[in-house]
Length: 520
Image (spheres, one colour):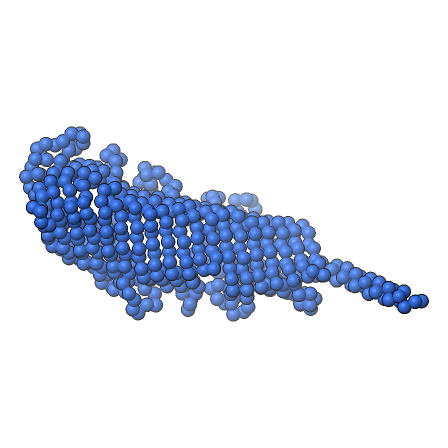
């Protein structure tokens, strides 16, 4: 036998041995792997699949048509509870053959989950209990089955259904997520977030969320990447029309419609420290917000105390810091309606731009700078309005200072508000009105000045609101000072805060008091 023949036979023998060993090892792993999954799966869910492929050469595993469902089967579809899901493929790359042979754990570089479609049938419970259940039932046992460095999720869909109503209250389409540098161990499993990571990315094409019976929220193109969040076409929409809403509520409550073309949150840092959630961001930008706030006065007054914003922030149960918040190119409309017959009184704020700095909660703070808010807008499509507002969240007296200026205001523009509200209209011009108010949770003091011309008041008949009540108008104009004689008139005002009313009611009463003192 020649040397070449010996080499060929030797190589062929090695190849045969390797192929036989590979076949035998594959066969053994195909039997062992399902056993590992079943024995280590202590979750309330069973995991099934149509096909399992193991490749020793590429150290890869792929499961096709994976199905997840509760181990305890419901008697009928109405009793469904928990997670039901199908996954097109799950691929595990670069797994450790040695650990799989010698132990009961799959250790790999990455796992890729393709086209998961998950439905969670959800029963109302405390948020904390629900979070702990997910962590204990799903994430905890996951560490016993597989340890990976990276997780990739592609083309996912997540739906949450309320078992009490069988209605969808959360739906996310085309979800993609990458989480890299994952670490799960005994220490991390004891934390609120049971794993650590070095990098994450989340993209969702569309989200629908119904937080309660009054509203639904929509959002498109949500992207969270490198500690930044971006989303477009945000909408908070009522589920009821105004008549239905008024019939539903027992006491006065605002009804909101909020739309935003785009919002961005940058430099996000969040987590848990000493069992407390913290959420810190550098900048929040809201662009082209279109908001409508509607209040109907027919329901009974809500007599509970209305806390000022400083107290609300101070008493938040988590640590929050927003260094800068900006709203630009926006529009706000406030409507207040006494009866449906007369229609709402309307206040509009166009080209609304707001900048706020140092927004903080009080948790863990000993000292902090004032929260400052600057607003510039066009009031009633007529004149420029500037407002400066500041307060400190740690001040338990809830002290604040707010001052503003409105210039070249044609009073006829207030007709949309005064006609339905007080059955009157005004003519004339406010050349410049300024106010400066210092207040707290109990009372306020302030001063104001007004330079105005040609003031005239017209009252209308209650039963015929388009016809002037001439006698009433004539009497009113006898008491109104027509102009400020080319010099701004000034006044001071002092008021007690009505605890059952909002901050904006307190502000409006101060403004109204100053106008009454100057004009009458």
